[in-house]
Length: 53
Length: 230
Image 1 (tube, rainbow over the protein chains, first blue to last red):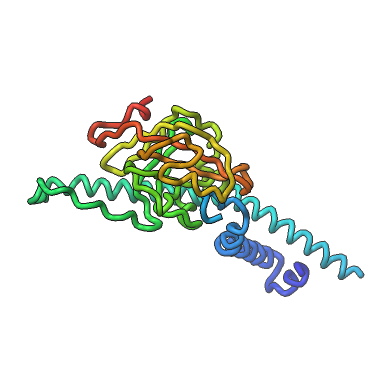
Image 2: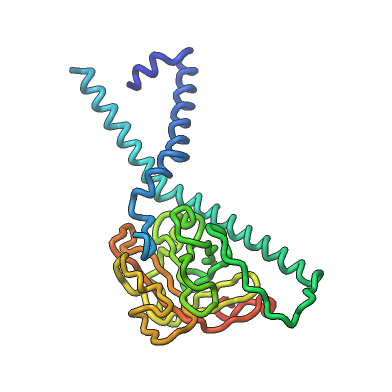
């Protein structure tokens, strides 16, 4: 998978490295901004009240 | 064969990275976000109170003898008070917001919407996170009878004194936030405060409760109450 992505990135090694870094940052951003906030309430840390268990 | 091994190992690395990132998010990033959100809520409150105190003198009400109008109900998800608990740290202060929805508790402590107003007859019940989202109640078990819980709504300081707790119970025990909470030892109506959080620290099988009664009030013009002075 990662080899496939690497081969399909344009440019020389430095451009490829730069683009991969940008892609990684984008993935981390999407995870922190959208995926994890959605997943976190499924864990038990939000249950602090006595009525809406 | 080599392709399969490579695919499986790449998958394992990806899943491992995801898990590490998620742990970082839960342990660290929710705290960063919550601290920012709580400070913002406190700023909102202080701005609002600064405006309140600036205006009333310029517009004297014509009917000063009439009973004051009943205060507006707390707006859902909006802050209305700041809580101080010296036992949890001299700089510990958190905004109290109306209702106990998940999104509200990310920004501060949550006031159970169906319980009494701050300082009024009945039970003013507040819930807060034990862990994640800034860990507001991480040291909840350190609370002891006699500890002060101080709140301000911008016009009055309310000093509550803890009478009982931490008391461990189950999540379905809704009677702990009744106007006269069962198991609290209170026998008649009064101005009470209940704090709830989860127990164990990272779990959700139980709840920790403390109960307090209103000990004293004073207008903000009179300065901070004794419990908050160093």
